[in-house]
Structure formats: structure tokens, C-alpha cells
Image 1: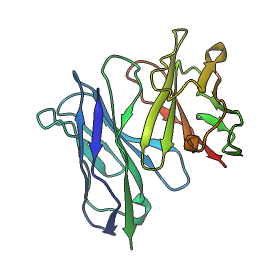
Image 2: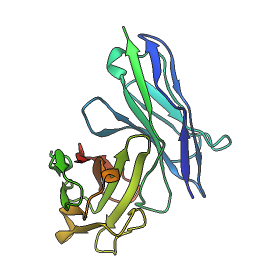
Image 3: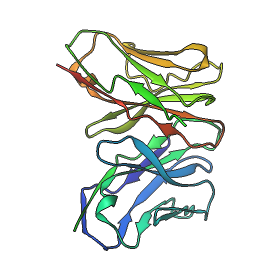
Length: 113
Length: 113
């Protein structure tokens, strides 16, 4: 079945450091790919998405590019802030309609000043 | 506008008791999903409702779990004869249609003593 693998945390970075959180997937067909973020004490929020190969999703300085050839959707940010501390989840959804999301296990990011 | 609302936000109960968790989706959203977030397990899909179609129950871990969605809106997830391994955060999400993003509630944190 479909699956998502993301790098295990926790990841601890200093403010203004470069962030990469790796995510790879296994799926039949061409799924849509997502990054969700869960800030402390809050619910899951959609951070960005990409629905087809070579699409780049971006939001709040974060970017991820849908790479079909490497089945990857790595999350990057050039300069992290303390407020970016959260748990980040990579997810996919089969392209066959309104199907449930398949999530990775999440990566906890802590940014220190 | 109002987001996905879940209640209660926290529930503590004794092993063997039944519990009901409620989800109010965003008005007009046709699809509703239940997920479980357990420590070390990430986010697991439980059940999915789409309009008037029969729900996809393929993620329910045992027959102690059931869910219904009345009038195409509010949903209730019921866990009978709770066990300690049922302790988790139960998340509800809704979406407006095919290829639309899922919006999550803040979840219900369930603790089984």
C-alpha cells in the first residue's frame, strides 16, 4: 500500500539556520503531496501542497518540490525562526479522489535563539 | 468562518468504559475523516465518510470502534470497552470536495486509566 517515510527527529537548529526535512513516498499512480505542521498545543494545519510532478509548494518561507523521479517531497526553509518550532508531517493522498491522507510519523523541529 | 470543531478536547475514562467523541465539520464539506495520533505511531486513518456513500471503515483497528455521520454533517466516533492502548489524540478532518485540502480540528485527547 501507499506509504510515507520522513526523517526522524528531533531536529534542533539555531535561529537563521537552513532547514531540510526529508520525505520520500511509495504510491501507485500520481498522488498529491502535502506538508502539515502542528504547533505546540494546536491542531494540524496545512503548510503547503503539490499535486503533480515538478510542482513546487510554498508558504511562510517553506518550500517543497514534487520529485517524481526520486519519489521525494523534501521540506526546506532558508532561515528558520524560533516560531517555526513544531512537528512537521509529510503526507500523500491517492489521486483517486477524496481519499484519506497517508502520513509520515512526523519530525519534531526545535529552533533555539 | 468556523473551522472543524471537536469535543471534548480532553477525556479521561476508566478501562472498560465506552466513550463518544464528536466532530462538527466545516459547513458544506462533504467529506469527513477520523484519524488517530498515537505516541510513536504517527497519524493513522480510521474511517472516512463521503456524502451519502457507505463509509470506508478499513482503518478501524477493531470492532470496538464505530462511527456514524448524521445528516451528512456531525460525526460521532464511539469506542466500546476501552483499553489502555486506545489512549491517543483522535483527530477529525473535513474537506470540500475532490482534490480539496483536509482541514483538521484540534483533536480529542483520550486517556484510558
